[in-house]
Picture (cartoon, rainbow, N blue to C red):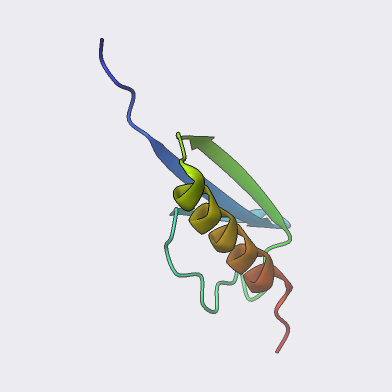
Length: 71
């Protein structure tokens, strides 16, 4: 039995622009054509134990902050 590669990919979108990144990549200051993204597409096939799930949820909360942050 072969195991499928486990990973999550994210795409942030703003109007007609998009920015792809992998899980846990820093999003500090991310912008799409000088605008904060307002849509996120999550493509995730991964198994989590409780600790990994909590870490993943914390990262998703970081994404929300990055999308909402206004300067």
